[in-house]
Image 1 (tube, helix red, strand yellow):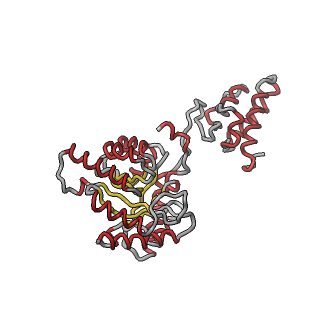
Image 2 (cartoon, rainbow, N blue to C red):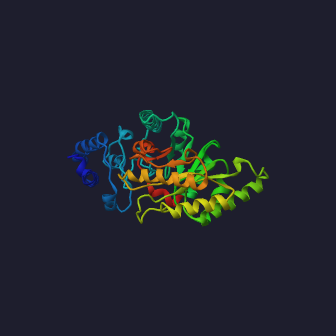
Image 3 (cartoon, rainbow, N blue to C red):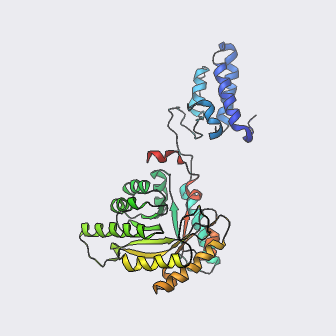
Length: 348
């Protein structure tokens, strides 16, 4: 009856059954509704997005049905079912809660895997930075990671980063890792500030570079600080489309990448080219190798040491492979914070 493959249909059937039972005489309803409610309490049932439409956006809770059926005792222990597909409080107040995630344990596991891979590759301990990608996640989960020692966080949306930066401690190091519209550059820099905004990893045009450079210059002048201080420059990575996919952003390896690197270095004194970033095609680890070659070419063009440039590559599904191929910064999100919920983006 409670097979996982039919969980949504089962939950819906139980819901409707309980409603009908609640209208029958109490002598018939009592034992049956109690049994069904116990099933609900003992089973972890979810109504996923494919079946939620059957309820026209309403929230349906086991506690509600138990009440309708005349059950009073033990209702607080009955799990609720929401049409949003997320667990709800037993009070059935309609406020969806984040699924339980042990952020500290997940973070420790990822760090352990990183350390093991670094040792296996005979690389220096601490040579790989972990950026915890917290997009769409509530600040409470970020604080759990912070309390567990995490300081580098990655966000994909400018407004979300600005909001979270105001709610988190000042020693957090923020990495912007999503597409950044040029008109969001100045607000991002001004709101988050330096050095809290440690790096914008997705620079792939001179237009964006100029906007960021001007925003940092304006911030520095407003603060009245020294012109040559390292704290008065913003770190950037040049994003490279190593897979050649049209759906991916970034510069093409070769002349396009080299030209932009030289132009930024020559005309944007408030920006520091600290490395390269790529997303790559899932399962195609040659994309990582391509970024390694790009780094060598950029280092040669700028006259800097190869090791002075970071390689930001690798995510939850492939960060260990990326480390094997030379990554110095990995971006891990769902493995730490759990699956993402994009339903709240319009509220940010």
